[in-house]
Image 1: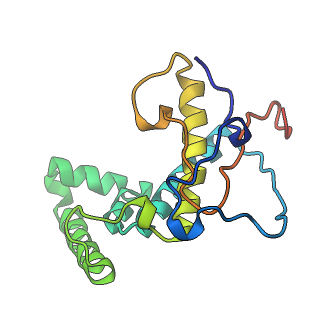
Image 2: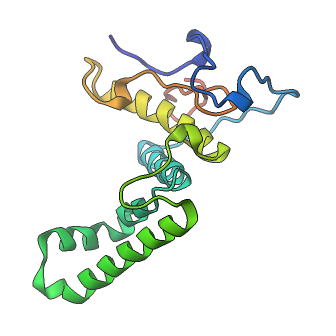
Length: 175
């Protein structure tokens, strides 16, 4: 079973995952829609940004350390490379500071965090967009299907309908 794009109008939308205060809501005035054509590299950057934004909104402050700018430091930490001792120690301190900021801001400690259901509305919107993009990309790369959450049909968690995404041909909107 392959999937070229996700069109939420093809799938019945359910209120079961939407916080009670937003269930049954309809957008009162028509909002404008936008179309953005991006390269494969750009869409992956967008995907990572949406993921990080949603995770921080759910209280996963430690995810900041997984940003590509610090990926090398994180690997040095994992492999305890002697030449990088000072950077490794700075990275450890940064991790501890983020854990303390998380505790102060959210009350959560360690790996605990809020679920996407209880995150703020902007984080839930970001997660909705993330799911649609991730789902389309994983099906494009693995049309035979597979295991992993990105193969699951996206679910609406925010007050907005799931976005639509299609593959652009030759950089043109709408294929």
